[in-house]
Image (cartoon, rainbow, N blue to C red; front, side, top):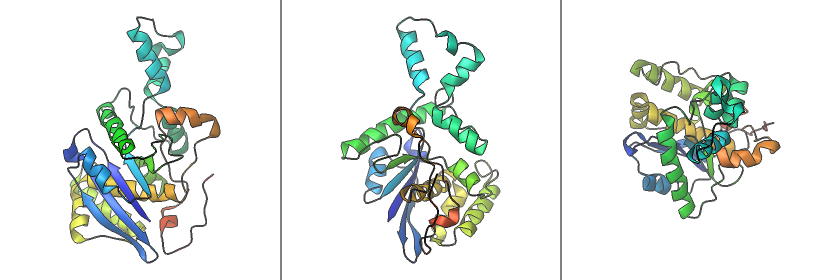
Length: 256
């Protein structure tokens, strides 16, 4: 099995791609690079069973309806006025589920700078579709799945405190991740890139989450939310320990 992880940014320079090959003897990080265009991402993901992309795949249904109504000159629906209403507009259903499961609320694709990256993600998903991929934003079918490295690491109990902003913390985070996944091999240059770039680090984690999703070791979309997830996107959150990704052992756990 091969999985690809993509830490998407609004511009190619900070877009990282990691490719991991999984075999009976372990897993090998075969590719890790920064500065990737949409065409680069699609090309590097060729042959992968699963592709984990760190970016929101869509916008909240209510936000889309709200903006459309505003464009038509209609007033906001009474339920969407005030602070409580704005919170509903800001977050997707998957964001609220992630908060309930982990205690951490993802960034808002409607109101944070993540929106610019999400616009690029829409282009990237279209690029995959142009090459024949089945783009299902819920992740239920096809190769593409939305991932969130920060909450996956929290679920896996890997300490990465401060890795986004502090170089020394990134060195510790990389060591902690590799200690937790001793079956993952990589070159000294790749390790150095993970230590130097949180984007590269997150791309590797995204590839690990892609493996979890391929093994059905992520929380499934509730059946009642399937249609909504196919519009808004759905974050694949690991439902089992990181050790269950070890290709040298039998995976016994199944997500609920």
